[in-house]
Length: 197
Image 1 (cartoon, rainbow, N blue to C red):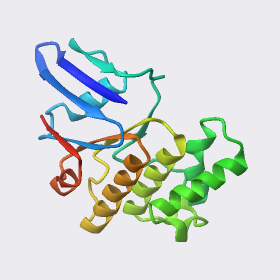
Image 2: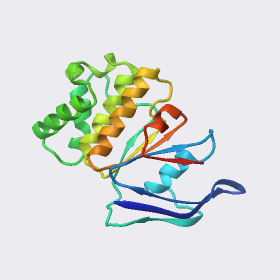
Image 3: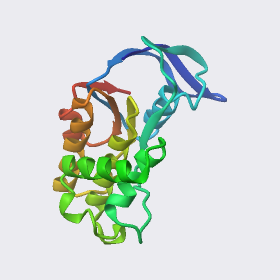
């Protein structure tokens, strides 16, 4: 899937958040969106997801897209008393998979993000980095062609941030487009494409 952003602008009243930006993104790649706070990184993610109408310009998709995206938020959401594998399986369950298939997909995804050893542990016992990798595993289970991540390595130590970034690369290797809004230049260095706002 090729996504083309053409002359995109977003304004809130008199405040210009994005001003006439254009670029394209391809499936199977990791795209990092970098820039200071308030530069429009999260706004750009919302426009690409179709959740926010731009003031001007367009986002065009080279092939049919049903609007489904996987979000990996800055603060990972999870059900603390449920196991790690049950939390990861929520991605597949949300797509209509039966419980057995969802759990099997979740175990495969947890293996890809190096969380197999904590699969049966309650999610409340995971570290911050492990919770972010759990969010990546859940996104893997959805099968959505576009994965959007908003500052997924914020407040993580260097090793945990590296693990999360590597997990994002794993998603892209499965043919998906991964778009990461980040302040972390080490994460940006691992991306196939960097867009600076």
